[in-house]
Image 1 (spheres, rainbow, N blue to C red):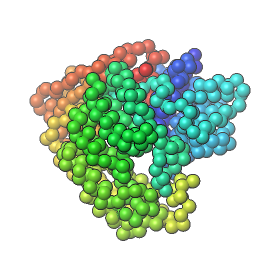
Image 2: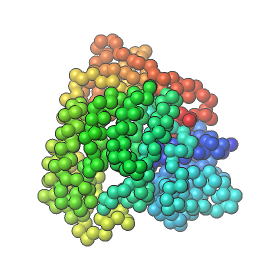
Image 3: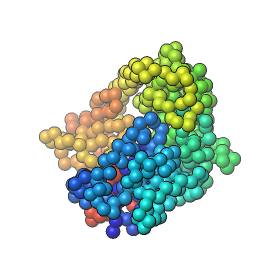
Length: 493
């Protein structure tokens, strides 16, 4: 029996796709492995013999994507020399972009496949082994919707459910539409059926995925479909938490805000990409909204959902960005009061309009502006998290117990508003991943909260969940049936 290991580089959609790739390999008779052996043939994690097939699911959004991929491949080259019959497969956005160029740079790669044909992976592995030569197969358009493929979920308690693939926007810095194709929506009934299925398997949290979730429904003529979908998901029995990512400010409408506010299981968290606070730069980016509209959306969300935690993406140093433009971004970030933000230095992506512009901002200027933005957001995040002190939070426990200190231990997980919370536990209390704990926040740091007041009262409410039961059952399975990737136990579906 051959074994496999999947490495995921990139976004939540890549994690979703990796679960499908693992499901396909399960169905083809492969067994999951927790580790890849090193160049001496030793497993990199104790207790696992290493994988016969290593799949790298790549990202192409940032400039260092290729560096990360070929760094991984360089490490695997030495491993493969010591393991006859080992195979390496590369998929995802960078594979869609580079195609046979990956094999040209790394001839020890056996399979390259794209974002539109995940389903061919087992067949390509067989063909590469039979023919003793690399197989490269890239489709130009989607052949099989990824969500229809078998899946091997990474978490017992949380699931990714795709509602659409592709993107119809034309942002000048982004290569995703070229690699994922035009937007294609799933029918609401199919989405709800998958949500119900993962909940039946024990999941208590579902994240709806799409490149632009709030344009969902345009493909089948219903512009209100996303708000309706949120409400419908709220009726699925056993589902406790609904999240979604990512919306686009240009298409974000008040009916979605109403659905969020009126559906108890939709969590009070929102990721709303800003990218720039300068209207001039937004126009150059082809982001079809302006700073005033963006801030107006945030105001309406907070009016309807006062405890909402809002996060964002911000790019520094887009071509032509002036100091005035950058200061406008700082002003909008200050006004937005993001709980946190993913901040990026602009990097040109080949094939995008912005990459060909001659007014690229010097690297030292971009770096200096980036540090100023990070410092601002760190201050805001700290202030926002400090404001949570004294608040009772409900935390879904993540994987693993933290450091034990005398009679205490610590678990980590996400609150309803998606903040990371480290909860101190009295001796003898060990909730399982997927169980829910309630605690009072005692400290706010830039990137997390601490809740340890339970140590003073000697009592910490813990609610055992079906997700915890599933995790416990899977942990008790024989070793070949257990796989750990991205640090989270998997659950078969």
